[in-house]
Image (cartoon, rainbow, N blue to C red):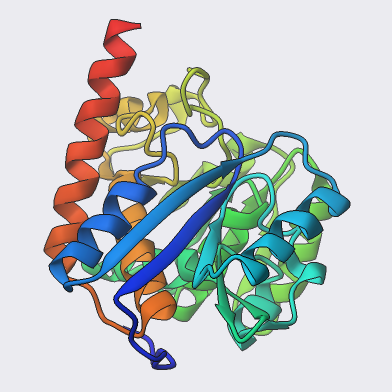
Length: 294
């Protein structure tokens, strides 16, 4: 658990999530369950706005300042776009140029990245010894950046990046240059061949999309495969990885761990991990039932 600044405790907390699409998000269930376990009255509001430009984001963030929010999470596609609109950034968020957690204090908004700390926790739990063996990251947007920094913080020194936007991959390579040896792959196949691990940092595979960010035939039993997507929990990529005999990390671990760290930042209270995990599982089960009925 990173060293969080301790906020003044409050029994009434207002939080939210900015992004699109987010109707499937387990964030409200996780944070509200953590609050109940801590004896707090907390409401978590989904702020879904598609195609928001800078002016739209400014208006939403001004509402966060003025309406008594303790903070908001930020998800796809706004993790990078909010950066210039905040008052301050944690050193880690500034280094990677992506934010998923914005803490509101006294009218000031400070950006943090608990995707990075959350993924680092999940990676360490696998007890891998990858060190200088290459790990491939497919997609170098907001969550891909966080995962790159997380792996580097865990001692992974060889990363391969692939993004259809090569400039984005190059930008992340430049950011990671001091902490890891980074190769920009020319194709997905080039990135994953011989890699110790493969991470999907794109929204490919998130319902209703059922595409594969990595062709199934490229996955080997010796590899570990992780997906940041958790809707569905078993994405086409992870089903292919499981069928290939690879070690699998679902999006569950990242989602739960980042929520634990974000709740601590928002409230100054370290939450009950079990309460958040149980709420995630229940929310996901309810969403799957809804998806099957549709």
